[in-house]
View 1 (tube, rainbow, N blue to C red):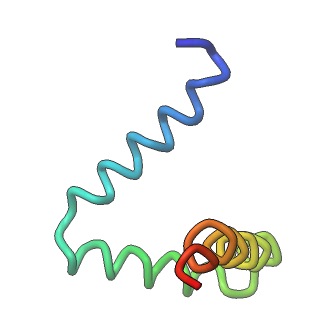
View 2: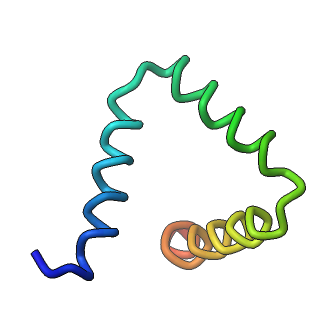
Length: 63
C-alpha cells in the first residue's frame, strides 16, 4: 500500500467500525457529532458538499 493510500484506508476502517455498532450507538454518535459542530463553518461546508455529492451521484440517477 502506498503512503498516500493510508488516510483512505484509515477512513474506511473507521467507517467499518462505525457500521458495526448498534443502531442506538450510531444514532447517538451522529447526534453528538452534529450538535458539537453546528456552528463550525468547516462542518457547514462538509454538509453542503455531502448534499451536492448525493445529488450528483444518487438522486440524479433516480430521475
